[in-house]
Length: 198
Ligand SMILES: O=c1nc[nH]c2c1ncn2[C@H]1C[C@H](O)[C@@H](COP(=O)(O)OP(=O)(O)OP(=O)(O)O)O1
Ligand SMILES: [Mg+2]
Image (cartoon, rainbow, N blue to C red; front, side, top):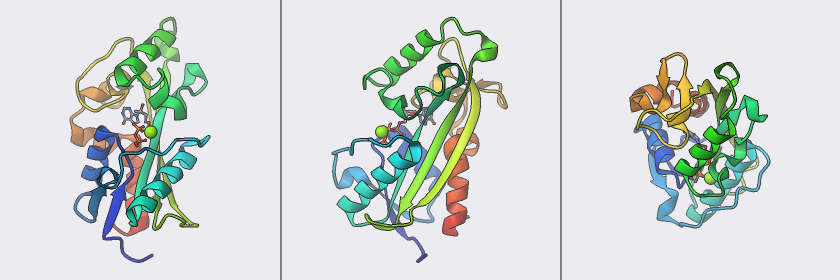
């Protein structure tokens, strides 16, 4: 594929945008989808990959540029993989604090050994809105759900996600450390390889 010099990041999540930008470095010029529209596409897919493709196509369509989207979420073992693709909407679209409170309540009686979970990230890059061959990369990050929030970094479910390899919550990690270990980091390593940016 033609060398990529500029792309639109198809996300309205400030935390995610910051991480994706840091991981991409200055190899490509990054534009925000908010420059073109504040209307978010409905995430109607049944998988992370489908939603990532849908968001990337939407951004490519309104910007006329190649677009990279991230669809991600938290899959909790004791909840059969919920909230999964519905992570952002888990508490009815009321935001991170409400989502975290609902998750703690759902797991109130679940013992530590059964609180396994994974963050999932699907990245989709389309060269144009109707690209028949999107570049797709996925990453997982295994951890556990804490009994109470810890740390002030990151975003979303980070204060509830225990990272065994660091012995701390994801929200307690320095940004650079999270960006080295996370589901998003793992997907991004693959994407950069595919794009010849690594
Ligand atoms: O590293 C993470 N640390 C903590 N929480 C995270 C992470 N990665 C995803 N998450 C959570 C946040 C949100 O509840 C859902 C993503 O939902 P997702 O639809 O992909 O993103 P979003 O609606 O916030 O922004 P957008 O769709 O515009 O990219 O998973
Ligand atoms: Mg979303």
